Image 1 (cartoon, one colour):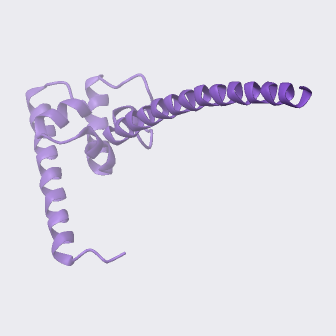
Image 2 (tube, rainbow, N blue to C red):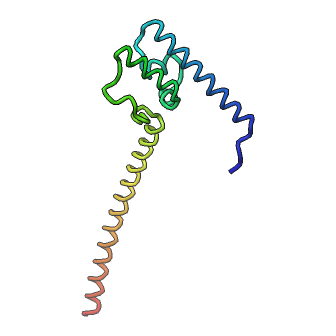
Image 3 (cartoon, rainbow, N blue to C red):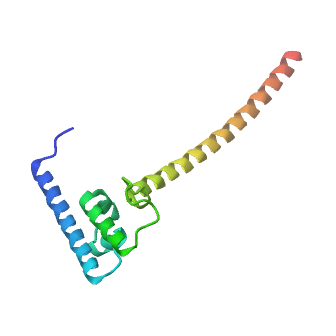
Length: 135
């Protein structure tokens, strides 16, 4: 595996910092206006994904703290290490797995039908052979 060039790493860092800045600004605006603070609200306001907010520990902590202050905390524990129910990657992989399972089930059904046909032909040939040998 070839190493990632420095200019690409720097571009990634700059993009991440800009995204964090937008999220912090959105959080501050929500708090200032008294709007309910949630991961979804911050993500919409900042134009970022909820996955990004959950992965960024500092932003996650701030959002959870403000959400708890406003009393909009969810019923689920807030200290989970990941929130797979909102993870776009998990949803995409689940959808892909479902499609693969459906394709597998169709292939198994086709193979079973082909096996039934082959077994029928085999039985027919054995019967013909038995009549030939008997006669």
